[in-house]
Image (tube, one colour):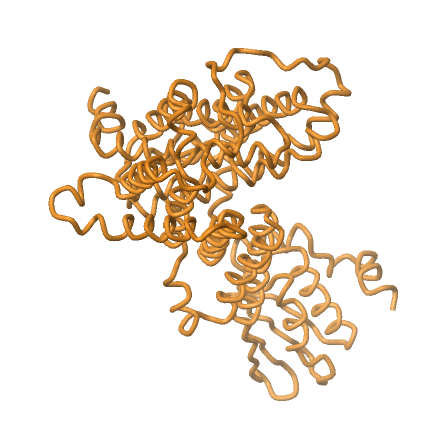
Length: 496
């Protein structure tokens, strides 16, 4: 047990500490911005980010991943907050946590295996684009000082690691934030800072229970929002966990992550925070800055709270240009540039799924819709591809009297019409043998196709024999086939 604790918490203290500080600094403006999107006080987003980051450090299944208040979740809260107020949002946050815990126990994270790599790549590229687009308001209608500071910040981020000794020991995003803050304070230039985003909290969060009536009416109000928050939160968290798995070349327990996200959201709701989930941008910052274990998430949450409550005067002086530079680095690092190079060698269907996922996610700003479209397209292309892998040949066994058809491949809804069309029902012959030893029947549509083939041959006066059905196919055919039931045959063929 001690070895496991040491590996999860103490194996990378320096890297996790510095990475956690960088993440905490980057969380502040985002938490405030997401609060504004949701229509609530900045404190709600900041308290949520603190609580979720700390709780998930203990309960999550993916060490090194950062969870907090997110834009994807904030977008889903707008209507509830506008129509019913903050208290109902807190209640919805608690319900979201409960639903996510249930999802964890039901092992719904296993559904991630149905999301293809092309969808994950599209999701990553879309988030990189959205992260970059989110920085544009800070770069439009501003003075030249902002552009100089941003470019200087990017220069520090990408060039500092090449310095001997200290270049590899201190995260360059942290150096960027500190240096540009000092320059801003010394020069007194007129540019936006964190303090301009909104008032920072001056007290620690307190335990509170949402002031809403506990009845069915309240449940009907909050359940739709809670359900959407649950789906989007888990989807983004699972996708981010997959990306961090790849970045660190380590596995994660995604069902535990579902439960951990639920517990964290319950904690957030009880401390006056809004629902959140894993953040791909902050997770990439954490990994790129050297964070690897649960300690980095804990430090990020604790440092965030300490800074906004006790060091708010200093934190408010951080220029937004410094944080914009860090987030541009995240966008560049997040985007899968290999996917652009691979467009020429990957199949057209794979490219189409990836690009469609990107476009839908960017246009709708909704992760769930983008992934749903990607999964749907991937399933359709896969079904079409497998449906085309069907060969039906025939040979005469006895000239003019008996013919044998050999079926090779998968018969299901996408290939059923092709299956039926391969038989010659007008041939004058006494007996047909259909050899199914190299075929597999998957669904009711496939069984109905087989029924039609048998029935059409019999109506032409031809004897039909089915041979070679494997056990799994035979089970489906025996249960649902009707070609030996006269009444069912008439119903299937429409009485013709």
